[in-house]
Image (cartoon, rainbow, N blue to C red):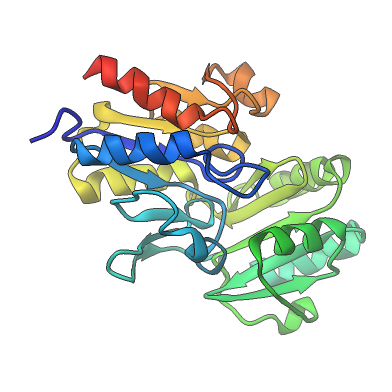
Length: 268
């Protein structure tokens, strides 16, 4: 038995646990090891898909399935198996063709299992793939294989704000359309977000929902922060997260996850 038995801590990955310097601050690594060694359950909820997160699956002491693709997938890296996954409806391909006609400057990545397909890649696309260390195939939208677990729309923020409004007005009942950072707009099946997958994970693990703590930095994290007993965010989080009412810690680089574990250490 440990002091953190039955406690679940879920962290966003990029810019919350994993910094711009492409590392997890050592203080976070040590704190997570302490948390899990005393009975705590720790995992990640990331916008990254399986191929882009897999190289980092052993980066800290993760001891539960990982929420991937912005809430479209739950993968157990210890057992090397997909626990649960949702896909965009096939109509997404036609809807994106219409979007591309009406907002021609848009580019995107579409995820088909472990393959990534890109349409009209731009500077954001190249930077995103480079950070993830991944390649992709550039093909016309109509030739991209289905199904897609998610799509990441990419352009400067002003364009993406217009894209988000355009898509929500037309297809808001079909899709989740939510920012993971200022230049990445995530598209998943309706209901497939980090909050919904935290609910699924809590039920899967048999965790008391009142013993769940989440931390994240952007719009796509708000659905899971809403499930958190205390909703945490790093100081570098988007203003929208601060305005929503998250409890702001130090920045990612200052070890906000370690700071949260210190708070939990006092609570339990």
